[in-house]
Length: 134
Length: 114
Image 1: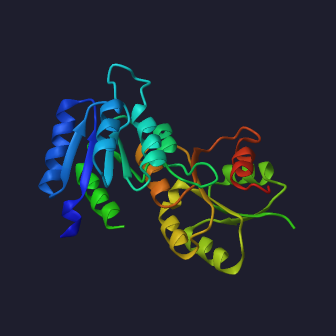
Image 2: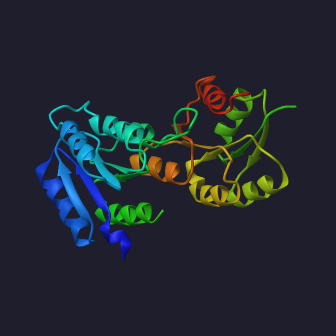
Image 3: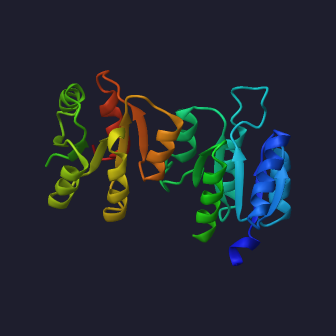
């Protein structure tokens, strides 16, 4: 199946989650790269062609106001327009969903193509499959 | 001609507030999904303001009327409800506020000519 050859970038500062998500996505047959920061993610995006990025909102767990994952989603939509983005978070905060999913600007574009609470791994896989079929 | 707005909601206190805050618009109220779809079939609306209790109707609206502007109001904002609303095509999701002009300002933001 062609969709199994898609390459996915997983960005999360938490080692356990990076590896868990990489494992789950590899089980589905996808190629997966991981990054633990905004900078490393951008370096990978420059060097390889990705079809989709899974981005944790908070890329520094020690800072509760950190929303670098959303900044990264914005950067991806600006520079790598073909890359789909799924934003994930472990925190219950509708304002973050609003920033990720509300259409913005005259082009009515969203930072995230989808938004998934971090523990809903089944939904994450379904969302990846759905977005990569489009 | 007044801008027409369809409200999908059945909470009397909110409906009274909406009619007052949005008095410069033509407001049509549909208490449930079925009535809302009948109204959308009958007439044109610039905006739909749906209660989060009626999220299921958003799916039908986005399929049948893909360009329709829909915003969702909620009593208890949550991450999952927000995600579902945006996934189903809402362009905005916000808590029901009874402060004068809060709702009006949302409407003005999403309808440029309002």
